[in-house]
Image 1 (cartoon, helix red, strand yellow):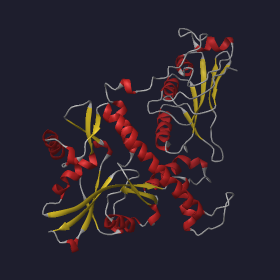
Image 2 (tube, one colour; image 1 turned 90 degrees about the vertical axis):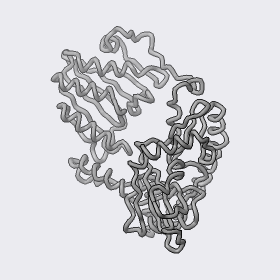
Image 3 (cartoon, helix red, strand yellow; image 1 turned 135 degrees about the vertical axis):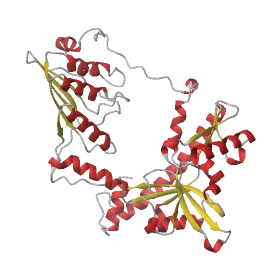
Length: 416
């Protein structure tokens, strides 16, 4: 999505000079395509033969249209009529100029229709399977959890969208857009605005890959290929459900704890007393934490206590990638509200986290935090927090990777 998009842009400019690998852009794209097809084949083989079979043994079963019981078919009809039909809107398409802007990695249905059964007058329409609806539709039945994919359920009742016409085909597809959209770095003072433009441009960037159900007809594939203006090598037929990441939601099912790996419980060093202030601990000796084997909580306590400690005058923090409910950001906001001098260096170019970081930057500014956008020529990869106390002592926390609260990844905690 990033490297391939960049290579395609170079190839389209007919720049055929080999790089340090000895391959031209088109040769690299050909090699990537070969490797990618093999990777996807093995991925779906693993999904079908291992993941799906193990889920079936555990009572988690994906039900196909031809496997529905009468009760399940009635439930599907109810869900479609009351939850899907009022929400979804098909869009008729006939040429590239009338095509909607497909969202990156979202699932769509391409419907081939024959008005009044006349094959010579066939036309196409697309239906967006909105993510907020949910991909896995629960079904009544035996077992722990039976479900049907949203696109399968829609294909069962898709003719309801086209009264008086014959539906010839209904195929799921999605597009992958080029994410290698560069920001103009000649004016770093306008970096936040430039990143917002990058985010908007990425939504309409060129399509580098079309994934479509292997059962789709040549007519459907050719229509999408021509309408999207992509090469035949960018069309990938998928032997299975698109976007396997959607199945990760199944790990959140209640009652499936025995199927999970034992959670890793990070240790807290014995010399860090949970009742003691982190400043007192660090004042005695430097502390080194190796994550995820040792707990990240001391780092959070360090910043949290500083936000409320009246002796702390200033906090300086770098932010690269933050969780959606970041306790670090919450502590910085509270510190600013408590009248402390708070400075945050925010990395706005953290790929695919730009929107979240822009949101945090504005929220921090609204709270009174001095926000510094990273310099155009450098990036704050080394994460640190520096606190200045009333006795002019400086306490620092440093790490070699981002502070990811979910993964507990920062590896060092040092006082100077």
